Image 1 (cartoon, rainbow, N blue to C red):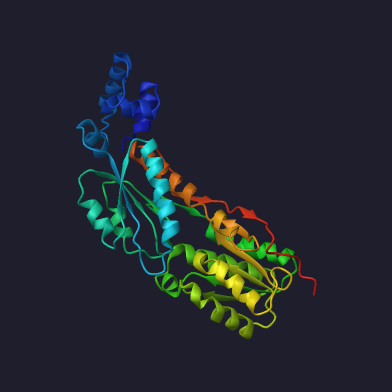
Image 2: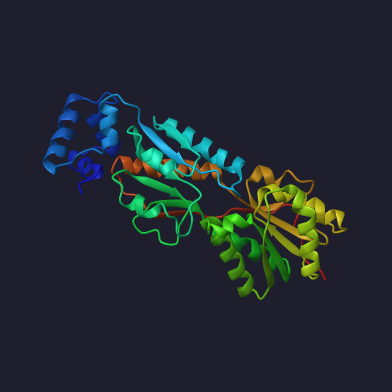
Length: 332
């Protein structure tokens, strides 16, 4: 299939110039326009129908299917959505936000939608076969078990889980626990939760650490009971990694109420947005959850696909670990 990059190469211009010349969206010199049109004719290039919508004066819309399912932390989703909207606006696109389960179907029945972004991706997501057969480009914010024929972007959650364990192992901790996403997130086999859990358990085994995984409910009121259960079941526990934003500060408070000092008696880490990591009384060592960066990357990839440019199948953002006051070396 002829792509916009092929036309650009033939005409000796950039892909964006080809897009502007064929859509009439921005002023292009007559000579350049003629050269682009001739290259398109010679190669048999036909712009994506979203470009045709632009030429016809209809809005150029990206759909963001972000279902607000049980266990989803809405503030992070909204931060991601804001990044998508802001980045799309910079590309002169509007965004249709769909938060119900049938969001994908609604987007496909909206004529002005030229491309799709999807969140809360499952390892074996039932939406994937349909996406692979579409005549519209899509980008997943999440990485399923089989990514062939798709475009995906996400934090490298497996590497994030490994980075947390590596940090704790270097500090001498031998018994660690992961307080993860709510149970329904694991039951849906949501990709990010399973990737992080796999990274955590793999690294713990590699370092010979005793480890355990505990899904955490979304209600902060459950933190005291969870803290008690962790200490009862794992008396040698010296470090906890929290991948559950609503539980982070309440869980630290619960451990301290039980007489444990952070970090003298218990080191705490988190995978969360940076601003949340510095909210507790003791700033938390964390791997950043870069919702803003993910939204921008996803839109950039989708716009490149709309223009016919090649994109990588999977883009994983490297984890960034920031050491703060909540972790310390184990001395006993």
